[in-house]
Amino acid sequence: MTSVLVCDDSPLAREALRRAVATVPGVERVTTAANGEEVLRRWGADRSDLILMDVRMPGLGGVETVRRLLSADPGARIIMLTVAEDLDGVALAVAAGARGYLHKDASRAELRATVTQALADPTWRLAPRRLRSAEMGAAPTLTAREIQVLEGMSHGRSNAEIGRELFLSEDTVKTHARRLFKKLGASDRAHAVALGFRWGLVR
Amino acid sequence: MTSVLVCDDSPLAREALRRAVATVPGVERVTTAANGEEVLRRWGADRSDLILMDVRMPGLGGVETVRRLLSADPGARIIMLTVAEDLDGVALAVAAGARGYLHKDASRAELRATVTQALADPTWRLAPRRLRSAEMGAAPTLTAREIQVLEGMSHGRSNAEIGRELFLSEDTVKTHARRLFKKLGASDRAHAVALGFRWGLVR
DNA sequence: GGCGGTTGACGGATTAATCAGCCGGGCGCA
DNA sequence: TGCGCCCGGCTGATTAATCCGTCAACCGCC
Image (cartoon, rainbow over all chains, first blue to last red; front, side, top):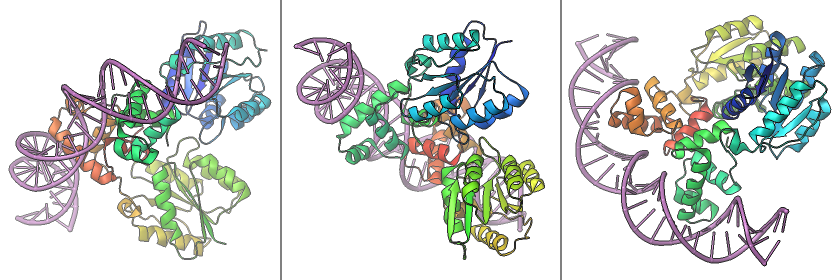
């Protein structure tokens, strides 16, 4: 029974990862966790063959979870997931014993290849790959401007107000809004804000 | 130096609690944490005289945090915060060694009285009180219908769609929307969704 | 040097949301 | 029995958001 545990605090990323991993040949079960604590709790009762885990998580961070997991079970195989911003975390996690990492900007195919590799070879280590998030099921790769506009929306500001705040015309804000809606797959600004929260793009 | 640590995963509730506790005579410092892990981490370096902690938290739950905290420091004084729904959690937390609990529906005055009491008397135990959330700084007491409408918004549905889903007329949905906006202090639906996430009303 | 992505901007059409006030029924609580 | 609150509904007016296409300038990269 080959099983994989996917851990990410963002519900959407978690689901996308779960679906992607489930298509890997040989994988019979994919379980999920929302944070490091849940991974550790689950690990006591039910060990998976491989863990995919986000580096940045609220509560127990990815790095600390790797440490505790490996001190409890030195044989655990862990692949870290990361976004471009925290390469430090990846370095620490790999130093702590993670087998490798995947950038969240890599393709689904690369994710599957890495998982296949890790499952096939128990000694496998460090194969940096990318995962284009557009292919993960959704694409939360917003530009800085788009995130600023999304943040403005989450604070209840109108397009005109956001424009004044960012020194842009209302029309430009509308354009940014339209583009970020399309990227997030949002049907309106309320949905966009919700997706922003679920993806962890805004707080 | 009398210091109090406030822990709640909802940013708005955390801030409201922080502000309320800061007005208690004798309290010189109020620190905050978003989850149990953060409490434990902080406790290592910087012990407070009293901890106010939500029972329901992602990751390390309140009960488990109480256990770990007390096993590390049997003298720690902890008051649990709770909503009506999980009285089980409160019972467990008190059994685990929490000094008492506060219902989130109690008044600010009662919160202050309980904190004063707990700080004055190191042996103080179990004084169930209520805290009317309206007096905590904001009042996210939405009715069931209002939450359903808010959830619909967070999924990108229009008022008409929400109405179809809940077997209500679009006009009624609009009324619920207007009322929940006022309660949350939201300026539009995007803001309402954001506040819903920050208060932990929707996921 | 050109390609792709980002940014900023405009115009016009259409639709949906928002605000305000009001009403009747039901349910629980004092 | 009344008071307050939640619910569901309706109307009319006003404003804002959304969608469409298009365009020019800039920047990093191969």
